[in-house]
Every structure is written in structure tokens, then in C-alpha cells.
Length: 220
Image (tube, rainbow, N blue to C red; front, top):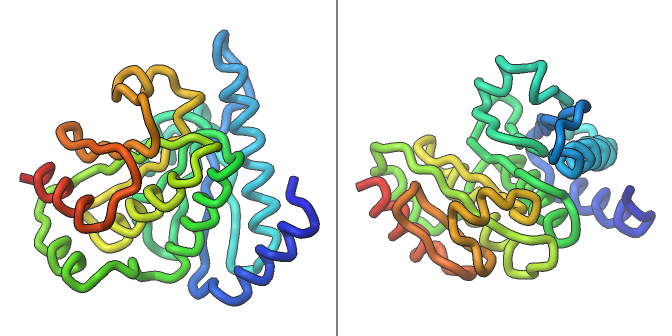
């Protein structure tokens, strides 16, 4: 699925930047119920792409699971729908998830997630890290994006960095075009749109200080 140029560039980047092993757990579904045909096709595409990416470096591995058949793992990793990719460290789950089609700019989002988890540290400013260390309640960040949005990968990456920094934070990158129910529920009229908990939200790529403010308010 990757061209020779893309494979070469990724091999070089992974060789320079991968530090710790990363596990990609991909949830798919083979039986398409009425109305699910597109999601099933997208989940199969996500697994094929994940396996191709993982083949580029020995520190990357893929586990393919069934959303219907592997209910224990679905529950353990809190997977809500397909396609889904849980990006896990060698021994730790940082709560980083990607949902939807891995196309266009979304491919960059997946690569960013891999590099972030492999680094083993968030890269956030000291002030942000100190503030997140004070959290005592769980907060979920969802960033909604589309494959054609050039600003979306940065917004999703920031949410992933927050999840890396705090065990109280989980982060979902959601490619929203395949989920009309989520688009309606969260009133997605522009992307990237970030929803923090169920009470805080904003549109556009914002600095980490802005996301921190929303996380703190959601936790309060």
C-alpha cells in the first residue's frame, strides 16, 4: 500500500527516531452487517497498512483482533468501534487510540502516534507536565479530523502527548467521516475539533496551554 518513496522515507525516520518497541493492536470485523460495509472495508485496510508499516522496523509489531470475537481484549482496551488501532508501548498502554480510515493526512497521525509512544516521553513543556502531574481524575480527549485537513495531525499529536504524560488521560484520534453518529453527537462542523471529557470543546489547532486549560476544567 506504500510507494517505494514512502517506504524509504519511513525506514529512515524509524531508524533514526524509534527508541522503544511499539505494538499496534488493530481491531477489525469480517462480517459486514447492513450499513457497515464501508467500516469493515476500512478496518481491513487499516490492518493491511499497519502490517506494512510494522514490516519496516523490528521494533514495530502488529496484532490483529476481531471486534466481535475478541471481546475480552475489546473490553480491556476499551475499544468502541471499528476500525480501531491501539498504539501500545512494550509494557504499557498509554490510552492512545486511532479510529477511522488511515488515509491522507491521517497516515501522518498514525506515524506520529508510533513515534510518540516509542519515545517514551511526552515532550511537553515543564509547566504543562507539572500541571498534569496534579490531575486526580480521569479525562478523555477526543480529536476529530478528516483525511484532507493539514492541521489535524498536529492537534491529534498534542492529545497523544497529553496521554503519554498522564495516566489519568486517554486520547482518541477520530477520523470522523465514517462516523455520522459522532459527527452529529459532537456537532462537528469544522476540524480539527477537540472534545475534552463531555463538557469542554474547541475548534482548530491550539497550543498546549489551551488544551491544558480545558483538561483542568474538565477534571474539575
